[in-house]
Length: 118
Image (cartoon, rainbow, N blue to C red; front, side, top):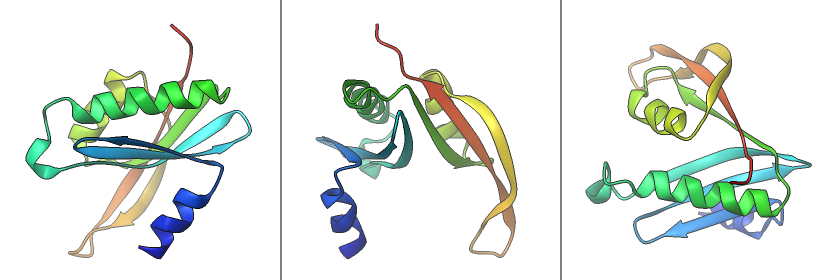
């Protein structure tokens, strides 16, 4: 909880709340990194994450951010579908980046999107 409070107090962090979740990114110059996006499990697959991410993009554009990037597990297909729907494209891959609870490793995909008005 303290780490979350520290992030929220950071002026470089943009927080977008919603009724069933939130999104958070950190801005560095004209670029942002998506730190996390979360949707209440009882409200998933209803478009809330799409709305949250679109609102985050708008807030970042207002701060003159031109690109956003993130890491996502290569096995997280629902998240990848969300990101691709919003214009993210693969910019790299980190082999064996995540370790699962069973000890297996999973690659991280680096995704990036341009934030343009309109």
